[in-house]
Length: 515
Image (cartoon, rainbow, N blue to C red; front, side, top):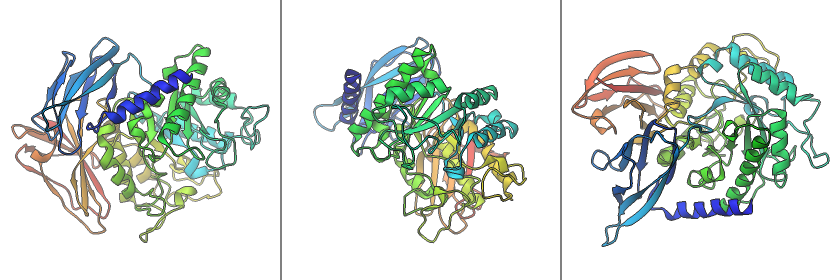
């Protein structure tokens, strides 16, 4: 175990030394799938060649501001290496080795989708609540569009260990095995929560530090398929985080193997908040997704905890190149549908904003998470998405926006952008005080474009198609509005695309398809 962790610490050191590359040097793919690796460098440098590329891939150094590899992954599983040559503007060039891991199965070839209990329920969780939420994922059609993970968050356990083991609070959860069996029969997976320190974030229950193997065995024995692993109370340094996450990852793999299952069927969800730049090292810990932001709050702007929608935009416009298949930056839970009725999601604020997004802001929340290829994790009480009074919380109110909320989170055209198998993050192509536009490469050669009004006034934005990566002036493009679900007039690559008049904090998303 110690040797394995030293190996990943060395990998972290190698990753950091790989700069001037500002992108991952270890990437993943399923066999024969569309593949893209954007070789983004820091300012003043550029990749001008790559040695050792598989024959099914090629390098493009002329059509964008950065070099990129594209094509298809090899059909034979295995580890492939190639070397990026970075122009150092000196007599010597810098060589950086990249690794492509082609595997017949990956834990997370596309970002996972599901629901977490924290924002809407916090400590008011129990077996009945989780059961009804899981059943609602099915009855509302949410499972059919991809939401297939029902996840329990903090405060499920007794306050102290018994004989060294985490024990469920039996007043809340009389039988985990009955619960997990029921959720599995619904065709869903189910997740559990812990922390890489002595106590969890709530401090109401023990964490898993120094009990990794014991807890991992119990999580697997109880029938869980996912672990959300937090970092409250743990050391601040990145190498400590890598060490602690690697210990739990290894323990989970061992526990799953011991019961004769495939470790790739268990999802290790790292919740580190982006404080230690996990996009640089988290994949080496065994995680396939990791939090890249503070806890998302139910605010457009949250200057107190940095958890508003605008703060997430600021983070993701800087880390887009680190996104990829089986290595997902997570923008945290969606706050669509909370309407200011959550618990800790109501904390924060500043800039005069009140808890509770407008519907335009909620649409932006969902649309940008899809553009960024973030996991899509609901956090609202979905049992109120039928317009009826429910009794799962003390806040028994009819959600007057239930139809709009359901329409936002079941938008299949936007979900397809999030789940696109090419796995690219959206890169900012316009970034001003009043607006931001992101462009995202898709697996079939299409390009997704989002335009967001960051201001409190109405705004219309016009963008030359030639300014969008992946668009050629030589072709004509069919335009699809993914929120209104309508086709727009086709445009030549030499023409401009124009947004509607966008309300404050509203987003419009287009899909561009070459005719």
